[in-house]
Length: 153
Image 1 (cartoon, rainbow, N blue to C red):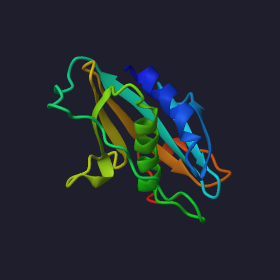
Image 2: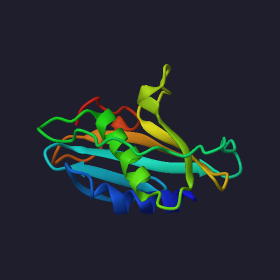
Image 3: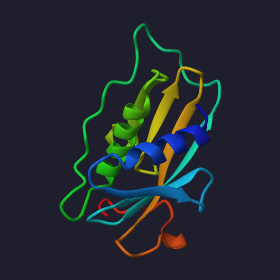
């Protein structure tokens, strides 16, 4: 699965998650997407990756079904939108290509980006979905706010 394939899977599956108003291509970054919530703001993401670097799967190792995030009722934690990405990917993995995935925000030492996911695929691709930023409802992502996402949208 390439970065473009991952982007298309997310665009198709995110709208199936309660609380997501839309998931559309964001031209601000290669393989970008913006997830807009029904009762909150928007989170901007970019997909990247490298082929041939994902560690091989252990016996029977595959991504488990993921819990539904809490995206309703006003302000939403950016970490819950991050969980929505993982939930959408797990739902879209009908042929068992995803070996493992993890969320940046749940790591003992999160990377500087803060929010995102790393996904290892059976074809050797290691894919990354990084949060570029957040915007309140009705606002655009300001360039000065890139890679400085709010903890809530």
